[in-house]
Structure formats: C-alpha cells, structure tokens
Image 1 (cartoon, rainbow, N blue to C red):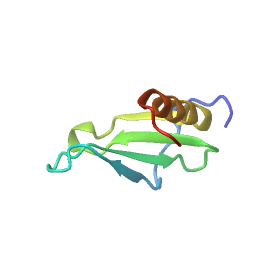
Image 2: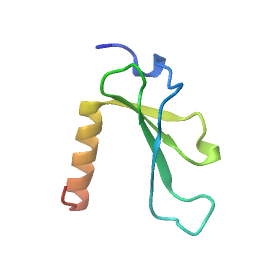
Image 3: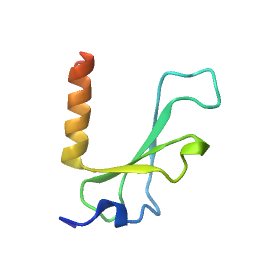
Image 4: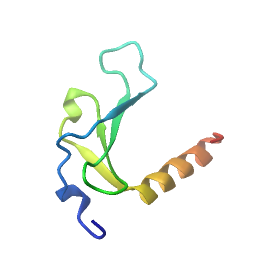
Amino acid sequence: MQGQNLYSLPTDGAEFTRFCGGNLQSEHESCVDVAEIPGAVEMFAVRDSKPEGAGRELRFTAREMDDFVIGWARKRGLAL
C-alpha cells in the first residue's frame, strides 16, 4: 500500500484503543481513539472520541506517528 492515499482506506473493523486525560469529570472527557487501519501495513487512524468529533480523523504512517509522538514527548520534557 506504499504511496496510497491514507484517507481512501476504509477503517471498517478497526480496533480502536482509547487514550484519555485531562477533563476526567465530564461526559466530554478529553480522549482520542487510535487504530491500525485494517489491511494496511503500519498505517493508523486517530479520531476524537466525543460525538461532535464523529467522522473526523487524522491518518498517519507509522513513521509519521512515531515522529509526532517522539517530538511531542521531547517538547513536553517527557521521558519515553
């Protein structure tokens, strides 16, 4: 799937994992759902878990996701 448009790939059957933090006292807790795109090699979908975010996704290759996570951790002074 090299070079394929990530947004053209279906996420039907994707197993999303929820990551939360922040607003823990509300039904609108700050969460994102992340899943590997089925049938794709190292391609991921990230979406907002709240109803108003439904249908809005960002998609990343594994390298893009790794660069983001490592860069964000460094910026925040977090150790991996």
